[in-house]
Length: 235
Image (spheres, rainbow, N blue to C red):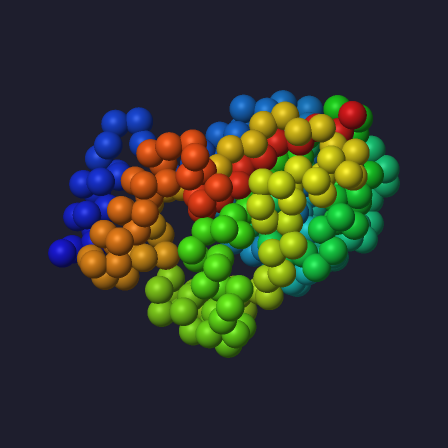
């Protein structure tokens, strides 16, 4: 079975279907305003997000110096999210796309994000769910195997694979961590899309398709969906 044809048949050609990245970007874009100063946490070198020119200023941070070459940013800083070189109350909106799983101190990070946001400021996250099969496998395999599997299944290089901690990667943990920092939860949903980690072979794709259909069939199984999408507001 050809994976590309399967992907088109079950996802791309379906009316109204959008991939997870598009859905997450829409969550951000619908909340932007031209006068905003926004913060991309974990921007890296090649971000999926380009809001430069759509808002007053786009600032990005990352622990990797690659962020300094990110052309989607007006300003770039190599730093850790737990210690950012910004004044209090300076950003209107911040987002983290697949970043919080890499934080060894999520509560400290949440407090720092709260500090740099203006009152009423918005923080939006997409994060992998600890109870999803991809994360469960990841947690119990060595880091060297992560590098090998990402290279084999997704074509990712070693420098694109960062250590994960998964200390804020369930619905409950996300709520607890960010509400403890002072945020108010505005929206949270569990999202399962196409089996992107299983698109190497037709048979693995079909297994992923079965899983996707199952966990999306009822709210009772939402805790086993792949990703957490959440929107918080600073009070």
